Image (cartoon, rainbow, N blue to C red; front, side, top):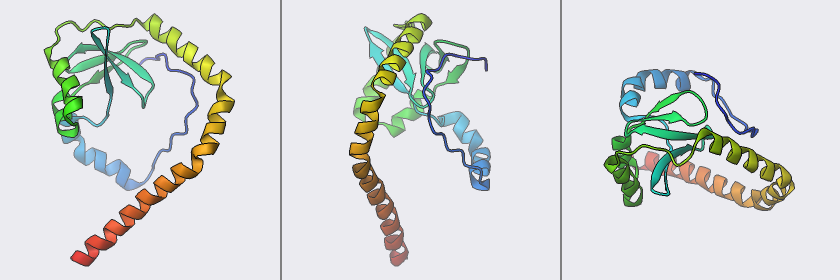
Length: 165
């Protein structure tokens, strides 16, 4: 894949190197090829659809109901909208229904629009970085409590399931 425009945002990406995280995807590859393994956000704006990939910070233009390409660069993504029906509630299914009824895949944005918007957002973020840091400090304890409660829930669930067996 050739280079493409991605906002200059530092993110901490943790890569797992254990055997399980390498073997399981290989075993599941035939299934993953059919149903997909990544989530996108399908957005309708001004009567046109496009995709935002929050994980990779990319805007994608729809080429068809099953393919999208990077708006500001080279690269394509296979879309699996039908398997998405299994994972979404009725509100999200409405967007998928819209995707299946369109025949005009013109993006509401050009690559130039994306680049300009990304640069403007980066500037705003950098100007307000102190506010983001202060906000993070304010909510950190709450985030930790939520994460701990999720972890406790998982542990309690394991204990309950073991006691049932």
